[in-house]
Length: 332
Image 1 (cartoon, helix red, strand yellow):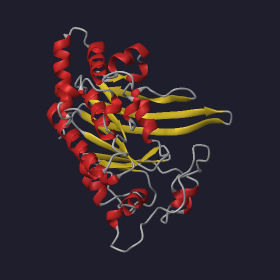
Image 2 (image 1 turned 60 degrees about the horizontal axis):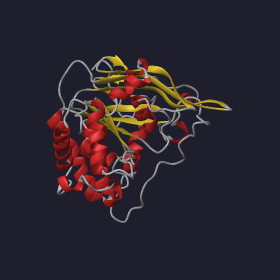
Image 3 (image 1 turned 120 degrees about the horizontal axis):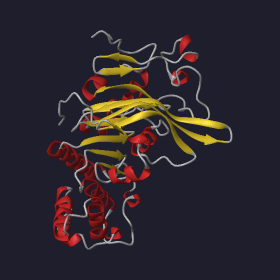
Image 4 (image 1 turned 60 degrees about the vertical axis):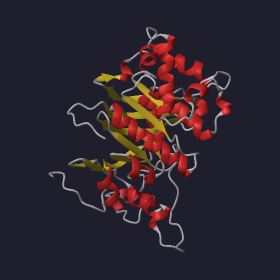
């Protein structure tokens, strides 16, 4: 699934995004670092409010006031996206970088046929492509995501598709120009398990076939276990743990990651009550001093309440914790 290379396709360094209010600037994303290789699938997981979607929107350049990206670099194929004008970003979006939203109606115009929307996505970026060639590409894209009778379905409006089919159309549109990177913001959350499984399979297939890199934003570690190569776990705007999926899920270092795993239905015995992490995640306006997870952590030390743990880097893994479940060797 992954392509070994020394140069990341996407490298995010020290990303900070805030939302300005009358009370001040509230931090939504605080010092996020990510590195993604061509063809690699990276899962970005965490509870609601952890900063996952804001991270995705910040990378894609879609943070609107009162939100603002105030620091950091977003290097795509070596170019800092934050240095580009809005017109330069428009030429990238939908072409080299695409985004799939949780609600496909954020992508699809309800008053235009699917054909018109797909043709526009191609011809806006590639006006040299003939209508006939563009239509053929549209049919192939719909076929790739499992839309039956794709040539005839091009003439349909979005409301003539089920929710799962609309999401497949949104994925097909994202793939039309064979982007190098797709950011997926919980695109299967509202779908039933069967349809979700089909879409996950299609996305893996697309990454293998085209070398497309994928950032998959979700709260569901079960999905990440099936889909991703690497996982980055977010809490209160920070990545608290990251690394290869198998290593992180088999032996998590951060107590928050362990709590998410223990909350999965498959982690309990029949008849046992579902587990949950005690307490609530902090709001943007009420981030505690020190480690943000300390008030909910059974392993918290006195220093956790006053000092913020640095990022420990050990091989291909990272974590931020004074009392990790697995003490990885930074020299390894």
